[in-house]
Length: 465
Ligand SMILES: [Zn+2]
Image (cartoon, rainbow, N blue to C red; front, side):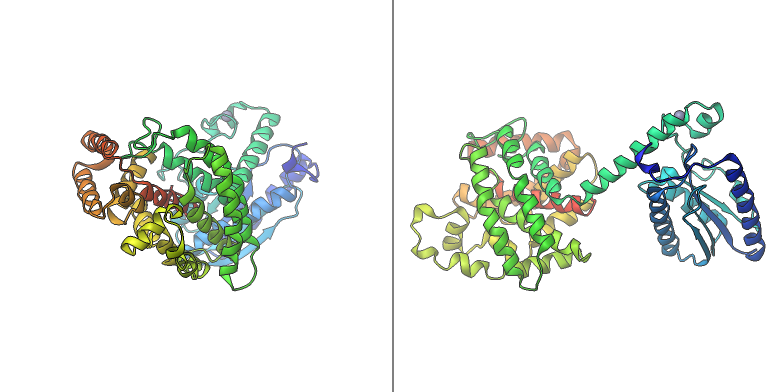
């Protein structure tokens, strides 16, 4: 027996017919009792002899809660509800709502289409007042209901008895399993973090940066180096998520200290995977913080951009003093790009970003990404060029050896968007020319690429991409 039917009891045809008659009467009574309102019946389409189980009860309940909140969003009020979960012929709900039958019917179809397990649901809408419920899905502007087995019009498959009960049960079972997997992935921040790293490296073309077509200004690495590096960092992001998930207490700098300890190991893993090349050092620091802070907030169900910024600010509040305090005593060959620039220009780079709660991501990259359209690659290329023009890229400044390059990148980005950006041939050609110029001058947008990674990660968390 399929997992979703486990623990269920076989029903007789007479049970099904008996309940059908009961439901019909119940609905008629509700229509008479609430003649100005809309009666809604919510059931599951479960073929075969077993029609109820723990799994199916939970599916109906989850679905009903979702449908109810959709009605509430439209200010439709629930006047009556009867939830029957334990009946052997299947769990069901009967409800009476305010609102027009047309609106309720549209919302019901929308629910069947959009809810994660909506295709198992059968939502009937009726009213004494109005016979509009007889309008079909197509008449209301929706596609006909699709068959779970073959994706054709379900009505046709039912009428022609195209599939055996076993076939349909197998399709339902795999539909439920896929939905469970999607839920898991949805909450797996470590997987989103690795995806963000990989999305960045395959985005093309990017001036001076590594992509599948070119190594840009980085002769010592290519797209494969980045794939190895991203894979090697997966355990780190799992650990970062766990730290955020499990941290108790208010002293968030303690949570950050825990993260930094695993960050040290992550750097070692990265260098091992890349034969000593720095591919993702910046991302280890910043993406680790984002994963950890997001997990911390999701656990408390308080995730928002504002809360994320606040949490990060609390996590890293001692960072600048801790990290920059002893810089002057540090031998110059041991200084990182960020540290040199702090000493030279008082630019605090990615540490300054972290201390301010990543405004370059939350106020620049992410709002821009949200507005972009087109293919994923087009959206990411545009977002990169927008970020590059609107933040100070410490990697670019280091390679150029002068802050004047900041004005140049603003000019280049402006010219790119003037040509129509990633959606025009002129825009893409311009980017390719820029890539050549970057290679000649040994420039790269490494800092902006790191910010793109962070933007992509949060875009995934928020479901923007
Ligand atoms: Zn079919």
